[in-house]
Amino acid sequence: MANVTVYNMEGNEVGTMELNDAVFGVEVNEHLVHLAVVRQLANNRQGTQKAKTRSEVSGGGRKPWRQKGTGHARQGSIRAPQWTGGGVVFAPVPRDYEVKMNKKERRAALKSALTSKVQDNKLVVVDALTLADVKTKEMQKVLTNLKAEKALVITATDDKNVILSARNIADVQTATPSTINVYDVMKHNTVIVTKDAVASIEEVYA
Image (cartoon, rainbow, N blue to C red; front, side):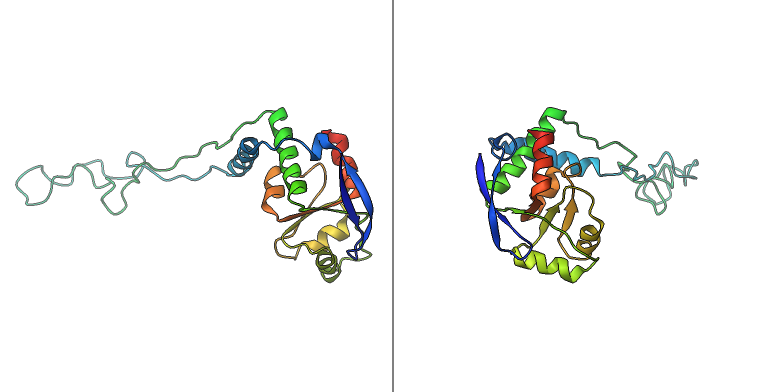
């Protein structure tokens, strides 16, 4: 069990907390982390782009001029790719970019990502994160106290005040134990997580 310091919203140390090695102390598998990031980015692609090939563009059924004797280069259709209004060479068509990973691999990748943040001292545990009102300024003050920039803030539940207060801060994102993913964990420099959220994560993934 790894011990981490617990801070309050003012950035002061208020105690320590043991992290479960089954989640925050696994052997980091960089290949699975990479695969999980590639999978998420690929699965986010809509794959709806479309352009017409020469067989789909309207017109051009007739040979524009005879093969020989005109002084022109030979042409078979005015809808060939080199013509204005012609078809696109190797045109993109709607497709599915889905990359598959099984559940065991996805869980192992997330554990590796969280462990890497612990090893790099980039996981900050706070005893509680509560804001009385929706105030971006107050949220920014908390991040400054915790010396966190480009942070992923994980709360145990969907805390509306925290979510809305963090929404307008550049490079800051919020999540819950049920919505965290490898890409978001790796993309942000610091992961700020509440004690309740740590317990929820350990309950699900340990």
